[in-house]
Structure formats: C-alpha cells, structure tokens
Length: 137
Image (cartoon, rainbow, N blue to C red; front, side, top):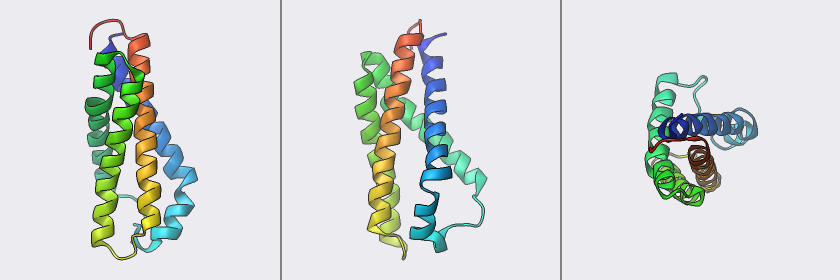
C-alpha cells in the first residue's frame, strides 16, 4: 500500500477514534457543566461531518505530509500539535469573544485537547505511512 493511502487512513482512524472517546466519554460531563445552555439537544450532523472532513484534510496537509516527506514522526507530532492549537484556539477564542457563557476553562481545556489529539494523530499517521507505506507519497 502506498504511503499516501496509509497516511490518509491512519489520519482518519486515529483522529476519529480519539475524538469519539473524548467527546463520547471523557469530556461529555465537562462540556455539559461548562456550556450546557449553549448545546443543542442533538448534534447538527451535516455541520459536524463537514468539520471532520475539513479538519482531517488540514491535519493531513499541515502535519502528516510534512512528516512523511521528512520521514520524521516528530515533525508530524510538532506540526500536528501546532495546527491543533491554532485551529482549536481560533474556534475557542472567537467563541470567548462573541458568546456569553463561554469560559476560560473551556478555552484552555479545548485548546489543550486540540493540540494533543492533532499532535498524536500527526505522529501516528506519519509513523504508519513511513513504516507501512511503500511508494512515494
């Protein structure tokens, strides 16, 4: 299997699994207590899936591909963590600036999560592509 395909599959699987675990179990009560009145009763699936498609393209382009090209999982990790911090920071700080009820606690936790999950995804996907992929990406 070529490195490009391995990198795409690993990006989707890793980030999806991490965010599913985070949102479905670990952080559910946190978000409910911090921003409960702002939450919809059920998610807007079109918006959510659109976010995941765009975000995974971003992880792949800004974190995984540079790591694969450099053959460095650490580059995938660093680029992913920075991309996650910036993307989640943009979202959280915009919400902090425009919504009442958005807290600095949510900003800090969410930005840390974005950096961690995206950095780990960049690392894992780069590692998988460089170890399992055969042809040039």
